[in-house]
Image 1 (cartoon, rainbow, N blue to C red):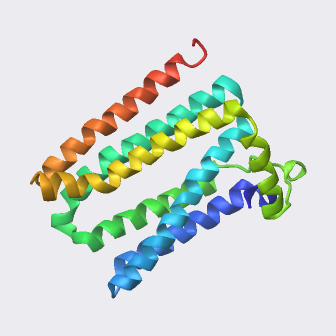
Image 2 (image 1 turned 180 degrees about the vertical axis):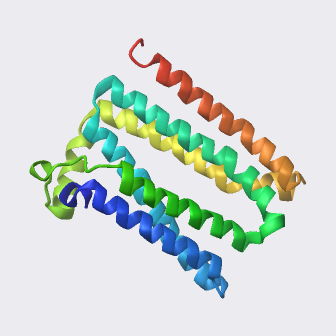
Length: 209
């Protein structure tokens, strides 16, 4: 969609939907409404993650792009460190609904940041449509490139491992190993610090090796 419409418009739409869905999570009268709102929250939050990468691809090439993607991974690594620690600290004083209000406030800040600081990076003359058929053709082309497939498979497998860990670790550490929420946050932070550190090293090494 952003290839045809531009990045900025969809970023604004995505962050506004994120604000609304986060507020709906906080106000959810039933678990069914909460699950539906969380689904929309996840999709709208994903818009920002995807388009941030597209903006980098619009503005940078080669080593510079690789460094910027490493910085994005650093930011993505900080979130798993901060989220359990902040969530555990806030859960007692403000409850789970209060945590969603905090997320709503962060989404508002993101929306303001997009409006003030993110220009359109894909000019009209470089936009193209074609829909799913064109996208399927593009997928066919890149999947025929062995070097791309190698990098993409490495990235996909590492992300799959990371999200499997994120999903399962609360159950394993708290229900099976008997750790408290605070202890779980510390254990979780260790791996996240490793992720951040690895990407800091990577951003320094790109261009040399």
